[in-house]
Length: 315
Image (cartoon, rainbow, N blue to C red; front, side):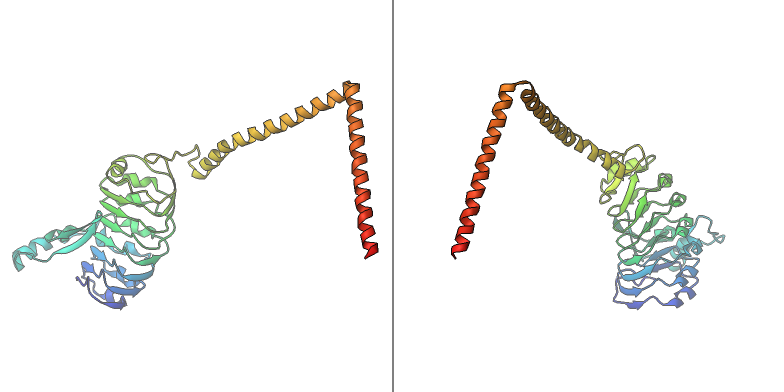
């Protein structure tokens, strides 16, 4: 079923779960709103789901593990080859299915029967990414970009062994990048940019190669550190601790300046004090000067006060 690029509006009907033999569902780029009905997870034969480019809100259903056709353990009926059936029985397969994958739109003919993917991008989805999605280890393409998802990336995301394209960019995801991400040996496209991720970036296998091909995959995450970024991680892998150490290093010259200023003041004061203590002539001259200054100040205050009170009496 391909109903993409139309003007459909309203919410997704709950009866969509009754279409139990549905294998491909494209509802992208319409004006659909509301939540994703939980009944959509009743489609156990579903292999391609795209709701991208709508105004769908709410959370992602937590029962995604029910989509067993998106797993590697999905049993295939002997002798059933959909692509061969369409080619031989119906004639040449002319349908073209556009799939957004690896940051580009790919068009599939009979190859769509081997394509397993989920695209919920460009919506208003909130909440966390369900842990159950990691059981869909047959997925080749997973795109949740441009939503408002929060929480952490599932720790067991490395269990999705078949993933070739993963796009979680432009959300509000936080926490560290799971180390299991390096277990995705088939991954050829990754985008985690513009989130709130922190900590050390996992290394190994093709994660290093992916960065060389696209150096924007971690952009917009100011808390990330370590290779391949220029921001070094401290011993406890905490960028905040590293910032504190940098601030401490910056403040050392300031502390040294104030220490020198205080030491100079104390030293100068003791020089004057010792001079007056051991030089009698200087001490007499100093106190005489002090007395004269005191007398002048006293006379000035008395005369000024007398003038002020005289003018007040006259008025």
